[in-house]
Image 1 (cartoon, rainbow over the protein chains, first blue to last red):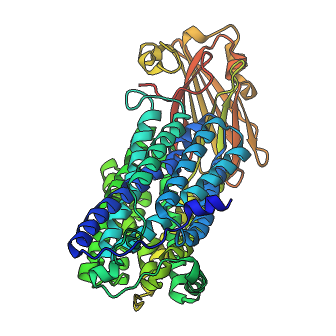
Image 2 (tube, rainbow over the protein chains, first blue to last red):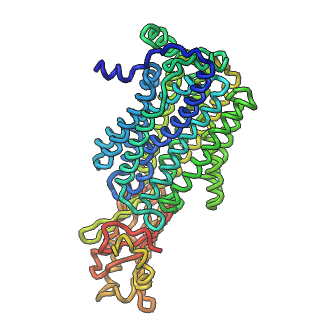
Image 3 (cartoon, each protein chain N blue to C red):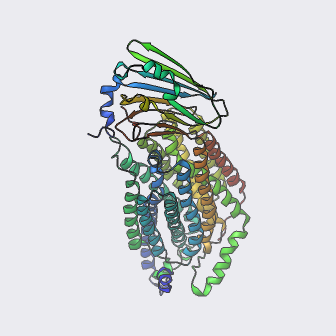
Length: 463
Length: 137
C-alpha cells in the first residue's frame, strides 16, 4: 500500500537551475507541452464519460433498460464523479499529477469495457459509478498543473484553452461514437457495445500520452515557481510532508468563504442544464423532434463545437475586457446560454433555428462552464489550494448533474406510453415519451444559475 | 440482405400492398385508431372479427376507459376499421397492446403511425422482425 502512495506522491524539489536562459527555455517548452497534453487528454478521457449518452436510446429501444434505469445509471457516474472530484481534488494537491491523471483515465477505460458486458442495472450502475470516480482524477490534476505552470494574469486564457477539452471530448463522442452506432448510410450500424469498446481504446491511448508527456510542478525540475518566473504576485506552495497540515487547514478554509458556496450552487444549477442537454438532448431530439440518431447527435455536437470558442472567448473577455473580473462576463454568457435554450424548446421547430440556437447555447454555456466550473472559484480561493477549490465546486456541480440525470429519467419515464405488438414469438415494443416537465426543470435550473452567478458582482480574487 | 436491418431498401417496393394502422392519442384522453387492410390480407369473416375492438387492441390505463366503439366499412377492395376509446384527461394511457397479428394470422407486415400529444412515430411491424422497423425510406 505504501508503495502505491509513494508512486502517486508529489516529487521533491530538484536543485534550482541557475542558468536563466535554460530556465526560460524549459518553461517555454514544458508550458507548451502541458497545455497541449492536458487539453488533448482531458478531451480524449471525456469520451469514456459520455459514450453512454449516445447509446442511451438504442439501449432503451432494445428494452434493456427503461429511461428511469438509464437515468439511474447515468446519475451514478455523476455521483461517483462528484465524490471523485472532492476526494481527488484534495489528493491532487499532494500527488504527482502525471501519474494520478494517467491512472484515472486508464481505470476509466477498463470500466467502459466492463459496461459493454453488462445488461444488469445494478452491475452497470456500480461500474458507471466507479467510472465517475476515476474520471474525477482528471480535472483536479489538470487544474493543479495549470496553477503550477501558469500565473494569475494568464490563467484565464489558459484555463479557457484547457476548457475546450470538454468540447473536444463531447464532439468526439457525439459525432464519432454516434457514427459507429447510427444506422447506414449515416453510420456504421454497429451494436451499442461499440459505444463502450471504442472509448475504452481511446482512453488507453490518452493514459499513455499523459504518462509520457505531462510534467509535475516546475520546482521538481529545478525551475522557480511560476509566480517568480512571471513576476505575477502569487506564491504557489505545493504540499510536502512538512507543510501538509498547514495546507489541509487552508483547504478547509475554502469552506468558510461565502462566495464559494454561491459559486457552488450556481455551478450546480448550470450543470443541471449542461448535463440535461448532454445526457438527454440527443434522446429528446430523436424522440420528440423525430431526428435519427446521427442527426440528433450532430445537433448536440454543434453545441459542443461552439463551446470550444465559448471557453476561449470567456477567458479572453474576462481577462482583457474586464481585468480578470468574472461576474460581468458571467452575466453576458449567462444570457447567451439562456435565451437560445428557450428558443430550442419553445421556439420554432425549424432545423436551422435549432442548429443556430444550439450553437449560441453551447457558446454561452461553455463560457459559464469555464467560469463557474472552476476559474471563478480559483480566483476566490487561496492559490495553494486550487485543487481543493476545484474539488469543492466539483462535488456540488456533479451532485446537481447526478440528481438531474435521475430526476430527468424519472420524469421522462413517468410519461412513458408503450405500444406493444403481439407478433407470434416476438413482442416488438415502441416507447413514447413527453418531455414537457423535464424541459421546465432544465430551463428553470439555467435561470437560477444565471441569477446566482451574477449576484457575486463585487467578488474579488485572491493571491 | 437482412430483411429487418436493411428493410428500408425493400419497403418502398411493397408498401402499397401493406395494411396501415394509425393511432392518435389526443390531449383530451381520446384514443382513435384506424386500421386499413388491403385485399391481400382479407380472410373470411374479417368484418365480424374487426368489429370487436378487443381483437385489435387493448389498453392499460390508471382507470377504466369507455368501451371502444368500432365501425367497419368496405372501401373498394380494402377494409377500413375505425375505433375510439375515451379514457378521460387525467387517465394516463400506460400501454396499448396491439393483438392484431394474433387475430389475423395471415397478416405479415403492417405500417404503423402513432401520434401522441408530445410526438409522432412511423414504423413497420413485421412477423419476421423482433423489433419495430423505424427506417422505412
